[in-house]
Structures are given as C-alpha cells and as structure tokens.
Length: 73
Length: 459
Image (cartoon, rainbow over all chains, first blue to last red):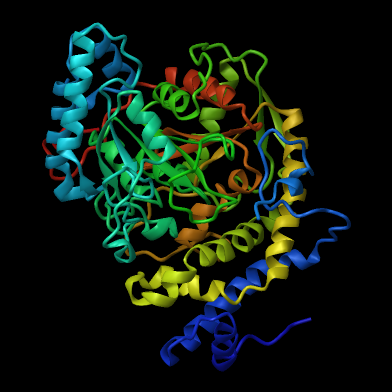
C-alpha cells in the first residue's frame, strides 16, 4: 500500500506537536527529508518479529537475544 | 627519516632505547603540523604547549628511570568529539562556540596517564553526522573528500601530523576516513572502549577507537583504552584461521579497482595459511533501514535543546536531518531495535562458521569534493554518503569489531581499504590477521601531502 508523502503543512504540524516550531521556509524541505527517511525505514514493516525484543543497547558479552534487559532508561 | 615519519611502534622503540627524546618527537610532529595544516586543515585546535609540557614530563620521567610504556611521549590527535579538561569540544560546530570541557573523557584520561602527548583536536563532520568532513582535505589529493566523520584524525595520521589519533564510528566514521586516506582504523566491539565524555551521535551505535599508520600500532593504543593487553599480534602464520568471503552484498556496487585489491589481499591471507569460506551475509535488505531507524531519532534526541534554541548555528545538511528526525514515529524506532536483535543473532551464527570476515571497507576510493553522487554500471545512482556507510554499517549495528587497513591503490593512486570483522571481543584475532597481511606489504610511506616538500617524491 502506498501512502502519500507528507505535505509541507503536515510536516510543520507534526514538528510543532513535537515542540519544534519550524519557520515557513523550512516546511517543504523537512517534509521531503522526512519522506525520504520514511521510505528507507518503512521496509522494516516487512519483518515478522514475533516475540523478538528490541535491542535498545546491549553488552558485547551477552548472548544473542538477551539485549533487552540492558536497555538504558 | 624524520621523527614525525616514524610509526608509533618505531617511535616508542627509539624513546625506550633513549635514542630519541619525547621532546624531539613532539617538536618534529608539531613542525609537521605547521607545514601541512595550511593544505589539509585536519585540526580544529592545535595544543602545542600542552603537547610540549607532556613531552617534557615524559622526558623527566625517563631520566628519573621510570619504565616507559608504549605510548610514553607519543604525540596524538583526538577527534573533537572527545572531552579534554580545559579545552573546547567543538564537534566542528558553531553550536559549541563557547564550549569548554570541565573534565577529561575516560579515554583522554587513560591516554594521558599512559604518557601520550595531546597535539590537538581534530576535525569531524559536524557532530559526526556525515561522511565527508568538508573542512578537511584528503591527505592524498586536496580535491577529494577526507571522508568522515573522523576525517581530521585520519588525515593527520596519514600526513605525519599525528603519530596516532582517536575517532568515533557510528556508521563507519573511523573506517571510512581510514580507508580513504590509507591508514589503519579499528572500530572495537560495542562498549569495549568507554564513551564517557565523548559527544554522542547515536548512543546505541557509537564506538570510540584508534587510527594509526600500521596494524601493529593499533594494539598498544587499544590496550591503554581498554586497560587490557590486546594479545600478541606478531604471529605471521594464519594456519587454521577461517576467513569468510562474502558471496553477497559486500562486493555489489563496488569499484573494480577496489574489488581487485581486496580480493588480492584475501588471496594473500590464504597464502599465509588461512582457510577461505564463502559466507552469505544475512538480512542485507534491512541494513540501511536499521541504521537510519536507530541513528536518526537518537541524534535528534541528543540535539533536542539546541535544535530549538540555536538552529541557525548548525550546518544545513545536519540541521535538516535533525529536524526531519523529529517526525520519525516511535514505532519505527522500535522496529529498528527489534530488527537489530534479529540481525545480531544471525551475524553471531554466521561468525560461528568463520573467525574473520574480509570485505571492502568502502565501495570506492575518495570522491571528488564537489561530487554528491556515484553512478554504478547498472544505472543505480547512490549518494556518496550512502555508499560510504553501506559496507560499514553492519558492524555498527551488530557491535562486532572491525579493522580497516590499506591494501593498495586505485589507478589514480588513491588508497583502498579492506575491513576485517570478527566475533565480539575478538579484536586480537583481527589484529593478528591484519598484522600478518601487513608484513606481506612494503612499508607504507606518508601521504604525499600536496604543497609540502615530500609531495615532490614520487609514490
């Protein structure tokens, strides 16, 4: 399913919701860059993670899959 | 041979044998910096007095009969992401104009305690968020990029303007400039080298590590950084070592000169006794997605306050990434973290079959500074930054150690790098293989820095 890209006003609104007011002359560029990042990252939605925990951070000597316990908070 | 031309190992031997004093060495490298800096701009700040003080102290200690460790009186550059008490950590950014570090980072403190002399802080791509380091020029050709983000460190080492240096590596930032400038760079296992006092780009991907002119020089620096000896690297016989040769990914969209040099180096490993094994790199479709899914939101989070208070002080390329990073949902970040779990598991499984994986560090040699993209024969166009990160990111995501070392030059004379990746905490295996390979090559010369006298010598 293809989802239409962010419009400049949408990028401005999303940014404002995160507490980052953007000057008007940056809306289009931020929208385009955010769309590009989205296009790269969204490929991860193909993966079926099952019970896989996130590896937020880990110690090198941990065995695989136990990383979640080391998450920095 | 001038003292600044000596490798770390050779310089340490000269100092230990009292044939050269630390003051002589530091003065020689400081003179070299004066000669090369107008052409290269590797340094943000040169701390000449700091270096001379350290050298005099090292000399007094030697005269008093103190045993000299391998870094005693050795001049170094630190990437300007690494805190040194009383000195600005600018991250090569106007955002940090009035910065002054209050205390030493753990790595700076350990190196100072080992007797190393700080020459200065080296340039980084702003806040390490980029692969070119535009302030600095390639040590081999001023029209080409230094690589980054630890560009200043690699260029200084290549030019003889530092005997060794430290960099940081989040998506290749030690290995990329090391490869592009013909020096050695080690990205250690994640968390092996302390990051306390080092400005972060992306906490879960950042690594601190050394750059030097030889593999042999890396071991003593790593030993000081970790507090543990890195193991003996002198064994030239690689019998029994299983070297994985990637059947996919690492040789796709790679310049023919780079591929040829790396395959020749792999053949030399085989000639030294190593057993070559074809390996299939897992989950390659998701490498860039995981790298970006982790790095982009973490970088934006680190810069939350200053992106709101002084956004105009960031360079345009960094500001836009930080702003756009605000728009990445938490769900995407968690997906990247879960995919990292899967990727790390599958890499550890792959590394049960082999001891080392050998591959190009970057797909091409240093690009012309004004060139934003690369074109591949199949018509694919790739940004220079994406190309430089592509082969380095897996070791950052999985946390496995990776050593980049020079293995030749392309037809334009630019250096080519190969990386050796291994199991977590197996740095000694990488250093042993790299050192064995290094012994089969003629001794490396300094980069022919344009404009300096040695550029007249043909290479």
